[in-house]
Image (cartoon, rainbow, N blue to C red; front, side):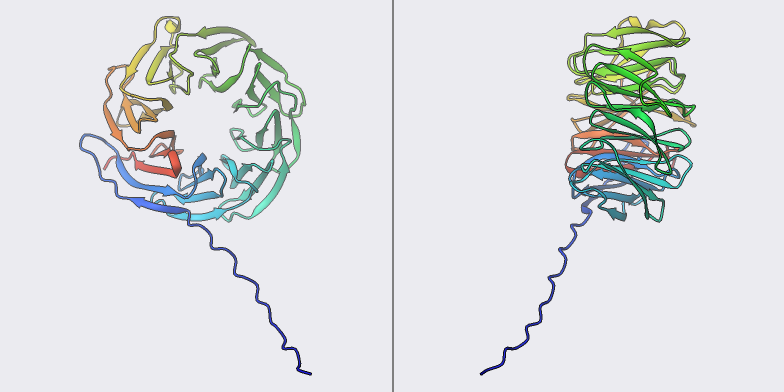
Length: 373
């Protein structure tokens, strides 16, 4: 009887990881534009959220349906690729003043990594099916997470320190008070001020409808909120009391909003127009805004930039692929324009405002140095 030969089974090799960067493009300086191109790349996945490390040397990107990609700021070279969440990552945030990176994903979890070793040090359940938003307090003592209708506050040791779990709708934005004692959440029905250590809001500002995003003025005297209809709501805060102003008349839903560093100007972008509202001492915000028109499609991002060598800029980006720089108090014409050829979704500045990052459709990422040559 013939003997049976022993069959040795070999485990199949693991599937090859898709490269983080699919393509790298050549980008040359443009005459008359004071930006120095660093790189332009295409990632394997679209980017949902970005965050610079506290020292500005690295950028973490949550890619939709994919990993967290960490790039070297000056070169775009991948430093690390993390896959911390089943289904993909949705949010990333570095802790100010601490060596910690937080990620949130479609598995409903928040994960905490040491930086730059990227060793996982904690994992928390955020209370919902997906974690859309993460926000660190000013000095990194607390982390706020938003998952569906649930907002939670955590210490860096993973202790649950309050929040609110019964918002009327999905939490769309989180913004910390500078004193680190409370965070404001936005959702359908208005704003909720959530204090560390408490499970219910200590103060609410009502709005009859969904709020999409919020922005505190740097002096904390105003809160501006974008809404589902073609308007914005502004609350003026005085001695714990709030007076509400509605600013209607936009062509479409406002998708971008930003305050100037001195809180005197509020910039908004709806379809193709950037509007500037005066919130300075004369409070002319009720008057007609100053329009800035050059975009030909949706304005998606606005950033004010203080410059040591000259007047401040307002940067705007849109789905027309254009980035424009304005001097708000001087002219209604752009100082310069940069056409990328890719629909743009967000602009991000490094902590020292020396690097500008633009994220576009289908994983497009471009970076420029803002330092003088």
